[in-house]
Amino acid sequence: MADYTALVEAGSALAELLRETLTPEPIGNRELIALCSPHECGNNQLTLYLYQAEEDTQGQPGGYYQVSQELQRIRPARYNLRFLVTAHSKAPDQMKEADRYRITGAALQVLRDHPVLDAKYLSGSLAEQNAEIHVVLEKTNLDQLLRIWNNNSSAFKLSFVVLLTGVEIDSRRERRVSRVADVEIHTREKPQGGMR
Image (cartoon, rainbow, N blue to C red; front, side, top):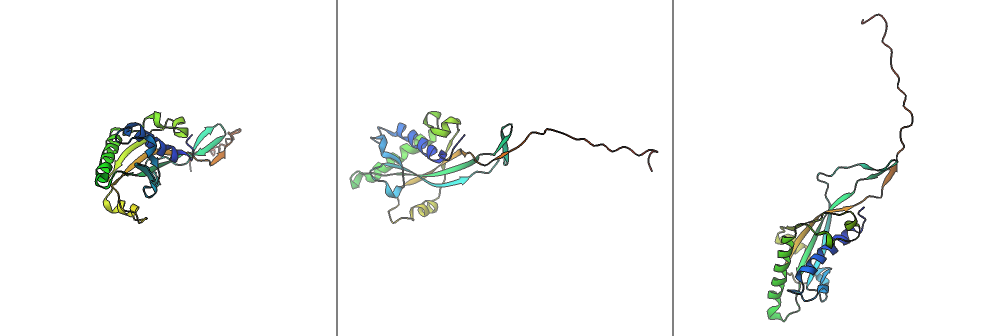
C-alpha cells in the first residue's frame, strides 16, 4: 500500500541513486546532493526540485477494487513527477561553468543508464509495494525552463527535467459491501392456449 509519503520516497530514491553514482567524483560528498529548490541551494552541488505532480489517468482503471470479503477501496492514483535537476558550483569564477557542466554531464549519464529505479533505492511504502518507478529524461524547451526559473530573481543555471512515472498513492476512501444472503426468483407462467 503506497501512502501519501510516496512523493518524498520517490524523490529520495532518485537522490540516493545520484548520491551513490556521483560520489566521490564529480561530487566529493553525498550530502551535497539534495532535494531542494535551486534558488535555495546552500552548499549543495546538485539539487532535485519537484516542481510538478500530475495524475496519470491514461490506461488506469477507475472505480473500486475488492480489499476483503466486505470491503472495497477506490483504486490507487498514479502520478507523474517532474524534477528540475540543477548543478551548482562553489569553484572560483573562472572554473564555475566547467564544474557545472561536468556535474550535469555525469548526472545525465547516470539517469540515462538507469531507466528504472533499482529496488535498493526505494524506501517506505514504495519499497513495501515493490514499486516500479521509471526514469525519463524529458525534453523540455528553454521557454519552459525559463518559466520555472523566473519565479525568482536569481540567474538561470543549466538545468534539465527528469520525469518519474509509476508513483502510486492509495486511496483511503472505502465502502462496506455485504454478501448476498437470499435470492428470490420469480417466473411468469405461459398463458394456456398457444399464441394469439
